[in-house]
Image (cartoon, rainbow, N blue to C red; front, side, top):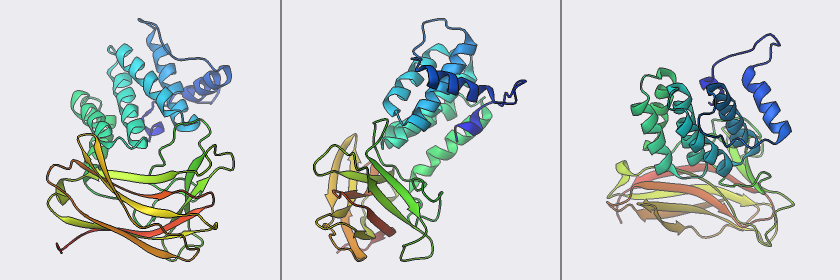
Length: 288
């Protein structure tokens, strides 16, 4: 997404300017906090380096700080400001802060509507908060995190990850696997794969989250999570843990109160070995 929002500038070398910038910043380990009145060209280089930090190094907190600095210094270049604000939304979404991400996307769409390409992308993302997506893992690239799902970790070398798989699944579409690095520092690791969306369509209704889970290692466990966000306060409800090596159905049911702003769904693992998840469903059911 980020690359499609950049201007192409290959120069005489045939290598895009933004890529040359990223290599320079990554190799030098240069901090990109900018003094006031930094030349516009250097602000743009700093933006590309911050995108590298976000998308390649996985340092979301560091990238967020740099985007804020760039946004404050790019007031004379509306394109740079819109791009920095958009990337802030991307970071917030990866961290699971969907309300903050939606706010950033809406700001891009309204305050920078003259930047037609990025404003359209922001409007599309903001509108996409209306419900869950990719529950059957049909979207995405094998070996990468499934589209629409996030594993909220901050370190440069994250101890947890999630991968899309096409083999070993109980269906023809796909499944996901939560993985833990052998170097994970915790005695009993805890990881989660989540997504969240606007609760408006579900308020006052009872919903059910279902999935099929299995674990590979003895004594490992995994369970489904259905949480609600009331102005930043999360109320979690979890299913019973699954500890079987065979595919086992897991579900959690709850009523969505009228004051709920966002719904968060996901799978949680306290496993050392891989945890597999498939055929997630999220539906409204009649009140019992």
